Image 1 (cartoon, rainbow, N blue to C red):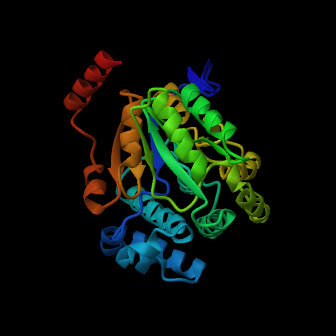
Image 2 (cartoon, rainbow, N blue to C red):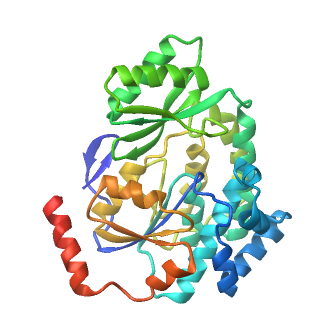
Length: 344
């Protein structure tokens, strides 16, 4: 079984035990990411060289040397994270026998997932996310929008807090943007409306309401101009049927039809990321092992808060890839799974 819109629905895919590859989104960037892979593996160097050539800028140097102020700009961060994730993916494919039965990515990470699944070429993905970042940054004047993480409050209460905030604002918008699970929902919209929604959420019992240091209100209605501009670029790209299912942000369920990808990516810009539902679908598909491919461990933390039946390991540097070359001892694996069942 899986979740959709807060209701239980039956899984419309074959229930097979498997391995998921997960790809991080914006916010996972750090100066120095990918450098160790670049230094150690020719395949990683090939990916970064292609990224530099396709974009016509020294993206690899920005990843490795910064400065941080430039790397964190949305138009730079998105292709930088994508390139780092695909460099890690290519190394993982060369150095191990691990292959996914399903893939998923958080926001920007969905593009990396589509490259992994063979639905999108790396060159097209790089061009698209560079433009996506520019369009998202341009959609709202600096300082107009904001985002905040609401902790310890269920989705209906967060939605109600957003509605309270909009009632007291002159046309200002705020809504849930990232349904991350584990008691964490990120909201986005006009900065003043976000602040009012945070106050309303606290009145409704939220443990915390934390403003996020972001440059735009991603995954909100304020991003619709960006979605419209991106739609024109997506229309120029050929999408193939994914070789393995891609659990999409917009629907929170698996897709394996190339003809649907263009619309899903367009909608994704201004609609909420349904990450909790995505993870629950992975669980329903009998996924017990996942690899977070790329820099950081943000997704591992989110998955752990949603389910104890999926273990997530990383593949973002030579050491983590080396650790994946051979599986964990079977007795340790069995113990961990037995403990997970006890806590399920």
